[in-house]
Image (cartoon, rainbow, N blue to C red; front, side, top):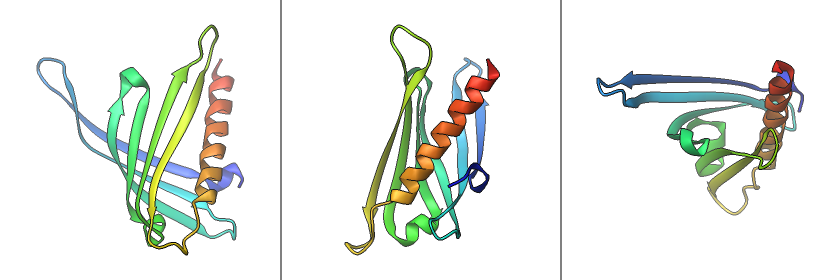
Length: 128
């Protein structure tokens, strides 16, 4: 899967209370990725949790192609700073429930996660 086949759009509406506390009022994401046969796949996601102190974000797929094969699909991404050096280790945790046993595990999505991680890494390294 090449980088040109991956696109993600995210939006967040945040309200700041008078005491400085920030509330996420609404959030969404739409991912576009190519499958092995080259057809585009789309997933609309809702951001369910953002925990800045843990460098963690959780998305739930609410519409799109993934829900044709999976009853539920939740993605959690967490970056853990490396001890004793620069950088972080990023963990993608994917929870899903297949519609039935004939549905394959989401290997194409895992490839997408790897590719996105590589692109983010490349982008961050080029900023230095």
